[in-house]
Image (cartoon, rainbow, N blue to C red; front, side, top):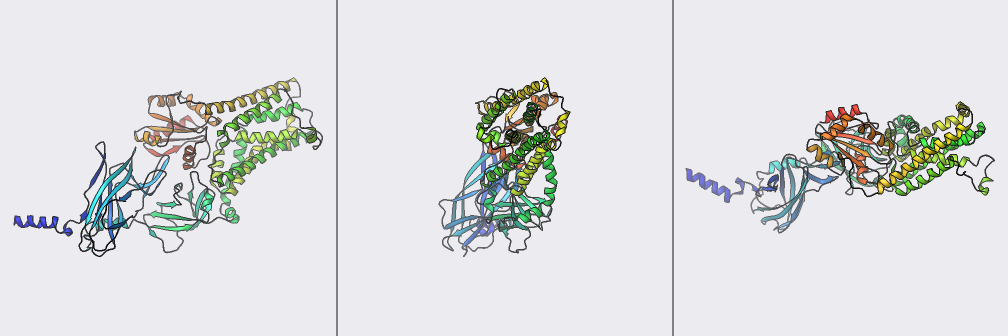
Length: 628
C-alpha cells in the first residue's frame, strides 16, 4: 500500500498538472537579510488548451509596513512592471489593476497596496496550442521608511494540456472582481462634472456611501486630492503646479471605490456658466464676503501696514490748514489706491493661475528685485517725512490738476503701498478668506479680493466721510514736526526690514544657529514620526511678520523650549522666504495658500493637528500631548 501512495505522489508531481496547478517558485526579495516581500506568477489554467489569451496572476505578499504602488502611484512611486525577456510563445503581457488604497502620510499622497495582492494577468500567445515558457523580470518599488527598488527573475512553464481551471483560478477571480469595470449604466450616479476654480465638482451627486474614494487621472497628472462632500456636490481639489483650464472639454478617467460598488468611467470636464457659478455658490459667497471685509479690516492693525498709516498722518501734519473737502478727497484717493491694488492683484493672480503658475499670498516677497525696489521707495517716503525734499509733479502735469490737488497722486500711491505691504501678513480670518479665494473660481477670487480691499480701505473711507474726526488730534504745533520724524523712523525701520529679508534670503548660509531646528525636506516628518517623535512643522518666511511673532511666543516659553531640548519634540521648519514649489504644494495639500501655518504630527495623530494662525502655547502643549 505504501508503494502505491509513493507512485501516486510521483505521478501527480511530475506528470499530472491537475494535482498541483502551474506556478513559478516563490521569490523572496530581501535587503540586508531583511525580507521585504514575496512574489510569484501563477497560471489559472492547467494547460494552454486552445486559448489565445491565458489567464495568469502576479501574486505579491508584502511584509508589515511595506507598500507597493498602483498604475497611477500618486505624488511619488512607481507601478509594478513585468518585462518580457526571453519568453517562448508570448506576444504580450497585460496587467489588470485591482482598486488601490489611498495612503496619505503627511506631505505625500499615494495609491497602492499592502499585504497580499494579486494582479490578474492576460498572456497573449503567439501560436495557439503550443507550450508557453515565461521568462520575465518583475520590477517593483516597495516603500516603508525608505523605498527599495526590487528586480527579480521569474520563470513559469504552461504545458500543452487541456485548459481546465487550476487551483489558482479562484483567488485570481476574487481579485479580478476588484478590477474596476466600465460603468455602462449611464445613470449619472456621480453627477455632472464641472471645473470650478481649483476643484473638479460633481454636481447633484447621488453618492450616499459613507466611505468612498474617487481617483481621477488625466495625462499623467497626479495632483487631484481626496474628494469631499459639499452639500449635494462632491469636490475634488486640484493641487500642484497645474493649470486647471487644461481640463475643460478634455476627457479624464474616473475610478470610484466603495464597499458597495467599484467602477470606472471616462468623463468630459465641462466649464461652468456665470449663472451657475453665482446660483450654486451664492450661500458660500454670502458668508465669505463679510469674512473678506473683516479680514481686510484686520490687516489695518497688522505691523505690515502701520508704516503706511504713518505716511498718511505725515501728510495731514504737513498740511494742517487743509479744508475738510481736501482732507476728504485725499483719504478717498488713498482708499481708491487700496481698492485698485487689490483688484489689480486679483487679476494678476488669475492670469498666473490660468497659465499654470502656482500662486500664493505674499508671493512677491520671494522676489529679490521687488524687495530692493520696495525698500528704496519706502526709504524715499521716509526722507520726505524728514523734510529732506518734497514730492512735486512736473509743471505740465500740475497744470492738468486743479489747484491744491497735485498731492492726491501721492495719496493714491500710499494706498498701493498699503496693499503691497499687507500681503505678507496673515492672521485669523485673513487666512480663511485667502484660502476660500484661492480655491474657488476666478469670479469668486475677484469678488473676495475686492471686498478685502474695501475692508482695508474702510478706516480711510470713514475719515473721508467724517473729516472732522481729525479735530480730535491736538492743535497744530511743534509736536507735529516731532511726530513726522517718529513716523519717518518707522518707515526707515520698514525699509531696513525689507533689506534684511533680501540679504537673509540670498546669503549662502548652511549653518543652523538653533540646534533644535530641522530643515524641512520631503518625507522628513514621516521619518521622524515613525521613530516615535512628535513633530512640530512650521511654515515660515523672513517676510512674514506674523511668523516672527509666533516664533517669539515659542522662544519665550520655557516649557516648549524644554520639550525641544529634551528631544521629545522635533521642530521642523519649512522656510518659504524664497520660492519653493515643494513647500507650496505641501501647503495646498492642507488647503492653505499663505503663511503662517503650523501643524503637529505624532504617533497618535498621523494626519496632524492644525494650529491657529496666532499661536497659543496652551493649545500647542495640549496638541503635543494628544499627538504623542
